[in-house]
Amino acid sequence: MELPEKFADLGLTYDDVLLLPGYSDLAPSDIDTTSRLTRELFLKTPLISAAMDTVTESRMAIAMARQGGIGVLHRNLSIEDQAYQVDLVKRTQTGIISNPVTIGPDATLEQLDRLAGEYRISGFPVVDSDNRLIGMITNRDLRFTPVAEWATTKVDEVMTQQPLITGPSDISREDATALLRSHKRERLPLVDADGRLTGLITVKDFVKGEQFPDASYDAQGRLLVGAAIGYFGDAWERATTLIDAGVDVLVADTAHGNVRMLIDMVRRLKTDPATKHVQVIGGNVATKAGAQSFVDAGADAVKVGVGPGSICTTRVVTGVGVPQISAVYEASLACRAAGVPVIADGGLRYSGEIGKAIVAGADTVMLGSMLAGTEETPGDLILVNGKQYKAYRGMGSMGAMSSRGKKSYSKDRYFQAEVTSDDMIVPEGVEGQVPYKGTLATVAHQLVGGLHQTMFYVGARTIPELQENGRFVRITSASLKESHPHDVQVTVEAPNYRA
Image (cartoon, helix red, strand yellow):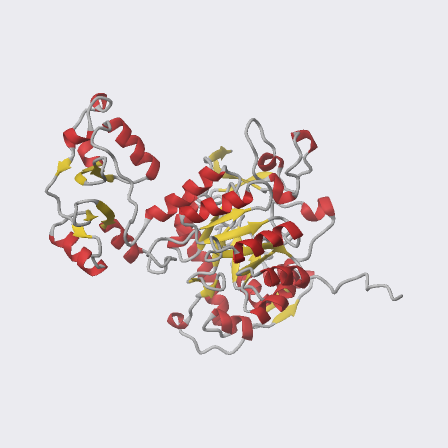
């Protein structure tokens, strides 16, 4: 009996290759970075924020969607909390809010203020017990009542009462815009023939639409959002609750995805009548066989990366992994033939590596450390020696997997869901901090700008052309040293490069 080959091919990662320049006749306006996220969803910017509890909650997901990418909400939350985060994203910027947050006439201004802070909105339709519109109230109305009286003052004492400027339930976007402008109103409640509230349109949504022309929207004009799920315990309940909240993409997410239980979860999600309409991403894998397992299960995209992340210790703790360029390429051999997009997850440090991942076979990239430290990430700023930092940790770190007085929902990502004592956890990640980077918009501009330049150098108008035309040259350690700034003392740091 012939023994299998013990050694696979040489594994390559981002620092092992460069892209060859090609003939280019492109103008900047010719370049289009639109790419497939899943079988059915497209992004104008091929960037995804990682499902990490120091990277993506609702604020990051909103910012990512506005920049043309998408955020994946982490799952180190209760089911209710994660669904609430989905709801916050969906309510933030909409064509028509079909289920607006309302308030009753007997609520106090204190309750109104709390609701406004919770949903980050400034105005509410006031409805009676039969959902009939009886008024509108905004934070502007609060200003004319002393704060000391908020606890005893009721909404119906200060609200703007009927008659109000309203629109019919089936009003078009154009007619709604005209009505808002002609009456100089910020909100247009929609009512049916019986005066019941059926929706709400805000002028803010039109302004945001113009401000963020590349934003990622669903069919109803709401921002796209994804959320991570697992395979263990109440994973099915989590998935269905997230779908009810309006999630667009479910990411069946473990550190090692080529596992029967997770593959079965993907297959069930894609065949059950209640869930099959939602796009499902499977991960993580690092081989052709692993990617093929998800393709066969019906996944709408496959996420690739075992151990490349800056805060991940999987490769040194377990000795398992595949260098990321090779992993992406191997996975693409299974996915490309089936028309399933590939997501390169982890290991990126510079904008030029986005193009490298795409040429290797990815359609989009998932970013953790490159977005960590931005204004929109969860967590407070930390001041160290006069410099600002934010916390960043792996989902396999002790901090993410240990309970510390509350339940951890991250352990099953690393197949330790049944470990009851924090002392028995085997971590596969570290906790740290990264320099504060400013707003996501600033960081995303540099990342997308770098990808534009990649496409110009290669001579590719579109992401598919970049995948098709891009060619690698393998380099040595001396070549890598030559690629970075050398033989100079850097005195002014560039916004897209840190040594």
